[in-house]
Image (cartoon, rainbow over all chains, first blue to last red; front, side, top):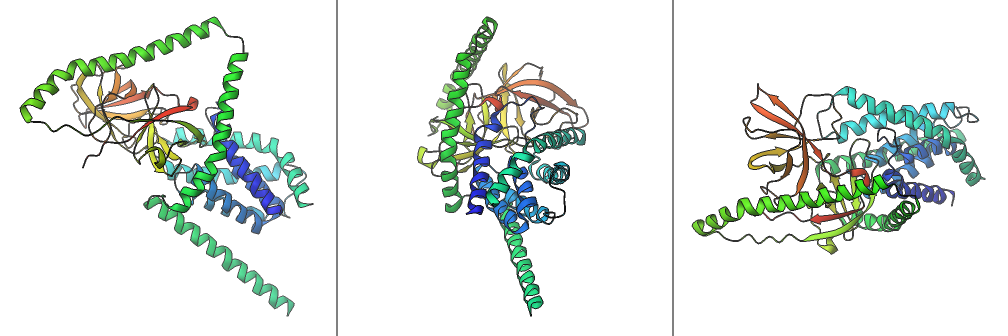
Length: 160
Length: 288
C-alpha cells in the first residue's frame, strides 16, 4: 500500500512535469529540474535501497515510454540512484537538508553527464555544456532545498 | 543458523538486484539499436498520455483565461497583430515564389519527359502537444495523434510558422517527436530568394563557435559561391522525404570555411519550442 502511494506520487510528478512544468518558461536560461530524480533521491534516503530502487525502476520506465527517447535510460538511472542512495539511509543527518541536497547534487552531476553523452546530437564546446551543467545543478540545489522538508514530512506520514 | 540464514538472504538480494540491473542494461542497449515500438510500450504510452492530455488542455485553457484577464497593453496587441501579419505575408510569399518560379518549368519538364505524376497528397493531421520533456539537452514531445489518425514514423511536425520536429515513435493514439534542433535527420533546403541556392541542414554538422548549439539548426550550402546573407529565408527544397516550401527559419550567421571550400550557415528557427500547443503532422513521401 505504501509502495503504491509512492508510485502514485511519482506518476503524478511525471504527468505534471510533462504536461505543465516543462512548458513553463522559467527565466533560468531554459534549465529545468528533473523532479523525478529529486523525488527518488529523497525517497531512497528515507525508505532504503530495496524499495526506492524498485520504485525508481518502475517510474523510470513510465518516464522513458511517456517522454524519453531511449527506453531503459531513466529506469536504469533511477534504479541505480535508489540503490546507491538507499545505502545512506541511516548515515546522514536528516533533520537538515544539507547532506541530502549534497547527495542530490552529486547524482544530478552524474545523471547530466550521461544525458549529455547520450543525447548529444551536435559536436558542442565544453564551455557551453559546462555552463548548462552549472545552471542545472544550481537550480536543483534551489528546488531540492525548498522541497526537502515537504517531501520528508510526506514520506514520514506515509511510513506511519 | 540465524547468521547463515541472514547471509543466504543477503546473497539472494545481491543476485536479485544484479539480475535487474543486467536486464535494464540489456533493454537500454537494445533500445539504442532498435526501435521502441512494441505492443507493451505502445499500450503504456496510450495509458500514460491520456491523463496528460486532460492536464495539457487545462494548461491551455488556464493560460488563455489568464491572458484574457490580464489588462492588455496596446503595444502588445499591435506587436501580436504585426507578428501575425508577417507570418501570413511570409506564407503568401513562399507560396507565390514557388508557384511563379516553378510552374512553367515543371509543365515543360512534364511534357518533355512524359512525367509520371507523384502520388503524394499533402494531408495534414492536426493535433495538440500533450507533454514535453525537460529540454535540458534535447527536446521531445508527446503528441495527441497516432496510427489511428494516420501518423507515420518520420512524419514532420510543424506549426503555421514552420518546421518543429520529426516523429520517431508512433502508438495507436499518440506519437512522439524530437525537435528539429535535436534531430539527426538531414533536411535539404533552399533559399527563398533564389531556388538555386540549396544546401543541407543537419545537426551532425559542426560549426566551430561558442554559441549555444541548441538554438540553431546547422547547415551548409552546396556551393561556396552562393551569395548567402544573414536574414535570408530558408525553406525545404522538396528533395528527400519532405515536401517543398516548409519554412525552416532565417539565416543568422554565415561561416566560410576556406579549407574545405564550404559555406556553413546557422539557421534560426521560426518556431519557439517553448510555446507550442497546436501542431500539424505531415507524413513523409514514399520514395520507393
